Length: 393
Image 1 (tube, rainbow, N blue to C red):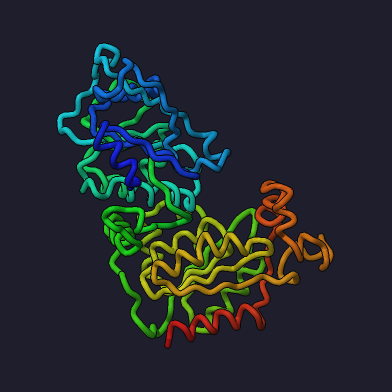
Image 2 (cartoon, rainbow, N blue to C red):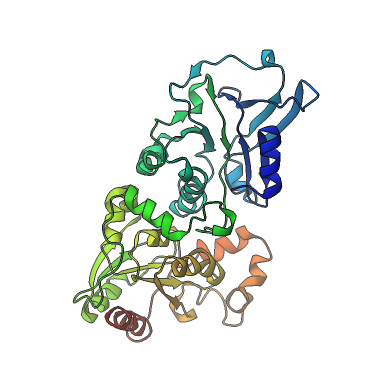
């Protein structure tokens, strides 16, 4: 989890921080005390440090430094290395079992399942799985709803109750990790991990957490099950009933889910794990591909202007997870942008020029201002017919 030079520093001083584009992660093998009221983390410093206090390092324990909106919801921790023990506050909570601590925030985008899986669950796995549940979590910017919703993951990673930093007090541990390590969108880079964990390890952990039984899809299903993600508000399928009827005619069994269905992740993950095809318009719901068995198929409907996101958020991870993946590119005649913009407008022919004006400008057009009416007579029907062939052969 740390680079070679950082590992040497950890061995020499008992404390090391690694910073990259997206994350700050600090590790200590020294006694650590967390004052949850002031959000100060006190670390006993090495004798090699000449001053009584070796400065303060500020860390926001959420892995997306480049996202100002997310980081604006995360309070910083102040890490203080101290030689003189009299400068360290006394312990209010000395935990009965001497296990290390992992400190992270449930702020950021903890209300969006894509960001949760990509920026919290996978980094939590990468940061704490090697402790084999002998670790305790302290959560800043504590969200009771988030802790309840992802309780199965937390309990799989730690044998101890999570600590709500908002409750105050000084908690003492024999070492720990501040922050979570992030690699890439829904990503794991095995070369950055001493143990070499990969997607198979993560998915095995995730499936065990939610008691999912189907690891590999059975070939040639007689009546393939499609889970269709129904959107509300933006990027809606305006002819959803026609789409469902077409898929039924082709021989699929269709189960429609709405955003509120995903809040009960234990039930929803089981539904996704039992299906053969996940279909939906580009959005956070497609991240549920992580619950699909190997060999299952993702059909992502890509509105105008969202090609890059679909490729990097979902297409590449799907391949790494052993899933089949189909892109359905929405044509101008299938988008509500038709009529608002001429066919030769930069909004249609050059989305990159719109993104160059700023993300919020592009978001208002492509993410928030676009609904879809798919061609179910030919174009989308052909895509789903091809999907059926992929499953049967």
